[in-house]
Image: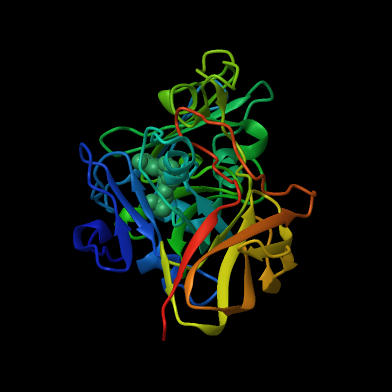
Length: 357
Ligand SMILES: Nc1nc2c(c(=O)[nH]1)N[C@H]1C(S)=C(S)[C@@H](COP(=O)(O)O)O[C@H]1N2
Ligand SMILES: [Mo]
């Protein structure tokens, strides 16, 4: 398995970058650069709470431990590669995607990286089911909590309930889009937790603890929660710990979009946690809501591409898009404030600047 340089060290114009804060690196996908269904690895957003670690594949191991297991087990890369391999196409989306719109709507920024639209990507992930790996150590009937931990400096860790950990499509991925995982995306092994916030998909896995009791961390009690005046505190958390991502749509446009007058096709993507979007509607300025065209494929826990064809006159316009998922969830017109700026999924009035040709 060959190692490639960390992408964040050579960020290009393909990303919108965030100023690094205390070793963090954040790079946002420019959705306007996407063409096919999958996000190419070199364009996939990067969210690191501390710097990308460079792990020696020869000595790397994954430790399974905790009172929820029948025995402790240490696996190396060859042991993981020897287990049955599966591939899934899944989105990973940061809970803070679109956080910049809190500042837009409320006049003050929520804490955290000011992502606009690109803290999401869809890739083909290949590796081993987490269930298969945990079975190597034997899961006890009393187990309730699985805590995967990263080997980065911050030892990023966030718990999963046992049923989500054992789901068919919860993977320890060793590859992304058919290539070994790149450093920035968690080499040599990361979790992929379908439909849940990106913070559940722990990169640079080093240890998984399975317990018969709750295993809370900072990352499900003090961040990645819905906290603030509109939300109750839950147990040890300052709010409601986030699990599944809500229904949302994004146009493949820069902000503001620079377009030519005349008939234009505007494309985008819509997604909804573990589910599927089955309708997308758009509205130009004060016009009626109209259906957008959906393309195939439309995979659950990934996304669907949509397009609209519309006549644009020179000047300033607003494009609004809303997605409706198979359970009938619709993007709301507004979302209440939350302190960590998570789960923004309101309809966005996207500015279009249409030139004189
Ligand atoms: N070990 C570790 N895993 C991590 C993180 C991290 O900082 N350290 N960031 C998480 C967050 S908040 C997100 S949104 C996703 C981003 O995955 P990506 O960088 O591959 O896009 O990784 C998650 N896994
Ligand atoms: Mo995130």
